[in-house]
Every structure is written in structure tokens, then in C-alpha cells.
Image (tube, rainbow, N blue to C red; front, side):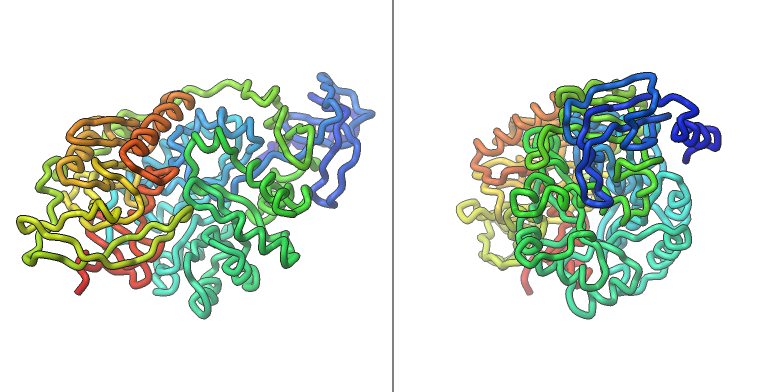
Length: 584
């Protein structure tokens, strides 16, 4: 919120009674409101834009924009900060050179580990960051009550409290089971958000027909789970915005936008999000800038693509008075770039301060201050012994359910396989790429271990494991043998979370993520190098996935079809129930 004194200063500056703090001359202003590009000079006072046409105003500092295009900072409309592996304080180094100045974040991962205290701890530096974080208040912590064990929860009272925070802009993604089963707690969370004039984000994966209509009637306003154009179109027809997603394992942009271009679909209710993207891919491929440029390559006009990354998002989340355009009174979040056909931010300003020069971050990273207890959240009571991963069976062979991974998506398909039983225990079928999959409860509550099977990793020997397992964030491990799986779980407890890969009892690679078992305080370049090393080791062991640990983290999600996996066992997502790993 702007204070009364600052508002008056802004008005006085606009009247020419006070000098501007900054004037950026000689720019081509991209006006996302009227879809024009015209010469201008951007005036800034107290971090806010006075006017994009400030050529005759006095200013304390004057910069030459070099005839570059000036456009608003980009907005990521749905992201889980924890999935970047990087603490918010260090993310500036990755996001700002890519032109992203606004993150609309749902911190449900840390909340599932550590509840409201963890939620608050993650966000302790909000006012010190060189980018905006607005909150999509986590609506489902835990995600699947009764089907998983989590470390924390956010009940109706906690959610209602967070919704009143000035940073809160929406109720975070709510999966269909909560609405279609008309569960009071979740419907009351929707009402709490709407009473405050805030929207409610959707998660309508796989829903069609009457179920989708009923879901929309529940008060959900958008969906980031659309896989292709047809799914997107069904949402748009019902008045739901579509947050087009392009993360590490959720590659939806091409299939949706190819249809948008082909059919000439109205784009005002389309916007971009990453949801979950690892830092190495942000560095190498890009962030929202990558999506904007790819949209242009697919046939959208530069203006359409820029509007999807800026004003469309700001309007949908009702924050267009703060961000999303280079208009009077908005925060002075400005990208300067040489080309609109292939946008590469050269200079970036955040609240009127230059934070990127020559494509490099030049700001100052705030010092993180996380509580000690948040570094001690991995507490195993079982899972460090090979026998903990045995799946007994009394026949020579067993027919089991297998989670069959779907390339470049987080959805999966349910299939059956017949596996051999040796010494009364079901074993994986490495020749046919079927590994054992287990989820080990790591919050120190009950020692549950769910066991099933997965196809698609390509691993020939060994095991890989992660303490990031959406959304319960227990330890999830896939492997060719029980012994290596046990070593993985034991190593994750020693380093208090992260990624690990093991073969023949030896730890070959590890990436510690000790903050809640989700994040690291290490410098971004060190995290990226470490991630590259363990991905390389995985590929040397026969692995075929481009982002194996991101894929692994989503297999545990009990709200994305067909199957999910938790510490309590295999989950039939559409039926929202636990099922046996054995086919009846």
C-alpha cells in the first residue's frame, strides 16, 4: 500500500511541482493497454511510474534508454518457490536477468512440511527482495487428508488469517475432489477469499463435462493444468482463465498455443506460469521470457505475448493497479530490450532501481535468516534397512499396478505388469524398465512406507531418491533393488533432505536441501552445478529422463491422474482412494 504522503508526492511530481527521482529517456514504450509502441520517456518517483511520457519533466537522475523497447516486468502467475530449490533471497540472480519481476507463489510445499510457522519462515525477507512475491494462499495442506502423512497443516482459521495479509492475492490451487465432494472446510475457504474480493485458483486436471461445470460453480476462476488446446478451450468457454504452464516436466505451451494461433482464439484470458522449474533450466532455457519468445515463434504477435506475460495476469489477479503495465502509479518495474521478436532483457528496473545491467544481476542479495528447527525436519523411524522395502507375495508371480510416466508431463497412466516373485518377495523388472517405487514417511510420525512400481526412468541399476515429493514431501525413492533404496533414505536423513543417487551401496551423488528438506542456502551456481552432476550420474546409470528428480517428485502427487503414491500406498486419483499395489 502507498502511504498518504507518498501519494501526494506522486501527484505533485505529476504536476511538475517536485522533480522526478529518475527519467529514462529515448525508449520505445510498449503500451499493453492500447497495444501500441511509441517513443517515450519514463518518469519515476518513489519507485512508481509517474508517466511514460516524461520528456519535459525535471529529474534528479536521467538515463539514456538507447532507443530500446521498454516493457513491463513479466509475471509468473503460478509457482511453487520451493521447487526452484533456491531460497527466495537468492532467486533474484535467476529471475531478474530474465525479466521476471513478479512471482505469484503458493508456498504449499513448506506448509506441508512445517505448517504456518514454516510458511511464515519462508517469507521472512519479502520486503527485502528485488522482485515482488504475491501469495496464492495454500488451500490444501494437507492435499489429500487420510491418504498421506504430512508434517504440517493449514486449517480454515490459518488460511483465513493469511488471506488478510496485503501480499495475499488469491486462494491457492484447489483440486476438484474438495469441491465435487462438497467438503465444507474447502468451500468455506473459497467464501473467505471471495469476501475479501480475492479470486480462487483452480487445479482441474482431467475434468470434463458436468464435473468441470460443477467445479467452476464452486468458485474457481482459472486452471494451470491444461495439457492441450482442447482442454484450454473448455475452460475458456466456462469463463475460466488459462494459466499456460511450461515447467521442467510440465510442457504444455506448444500444444495450447498452436491451437490458439490456428483458431484465432481471444487471448485476453491467457497468461503464463512455470509452476515447478529447476534452476538449471531457468538459467539455460529461460523463465517467462522463454514462454513469451516461444509464443511469438508459434505465431502470436509480440504484443499478444507480452500482454499474456503482464497485463492479462495483473488484471486476472486484480493487481493491475500495482503491476503489469508502464502506467501512472504502478511500480516502476521496467524491462529494456533491443528486440520485440526475441526479447532478451538488457536492463531491468525494480521499483525504479536498476537491478540488471547488460543482462546481469547487479542488486544486493539480502541475508537469509531461517530458524534452526527448519533444518531438522527429516526424521525417519523406518526406511534405512533393505527389508523395509520388501513387498511380500505368496505366488511365483504377481500382477501389479504400475505408474507409467508420460513424457514431458506430470500426468501418468495406469498399467498392469506381471512381475517375478523370488524368496516370497516381488522384484522389479529392469529389462522392461519397471522399478520399485516407495514413499517413506519422514516427518517422524508413524514410519509408514508405501510400495509400488513405476515405468519410465530407464535406470539399469541403483536408486534415486528425493525429500521433495508433492505435496506430502515424504521421501520418495525409485530403484532396482531394496538395498540401494535403503541407502538412499538413510543418506537423505543424514543430510536433512535433498536429492541422492546410489548404486551398489555407494552414494554417487547428492544435493543437500536442508531447509525443510526442500531448499538450499547455497549460491545458485553451486546448486546448479550439483544438480547437473547428479543428473549426469543418473544418465550414466541408464536413465533417460531430462529432469529425473522433478519427475520423481511428482509421482507422489495424489491429485494428478491416473495414480499417485504416498506413504500410505497407491492412490487412485479419480476415485480419491487408496488401492492395493496388486491387481485384484
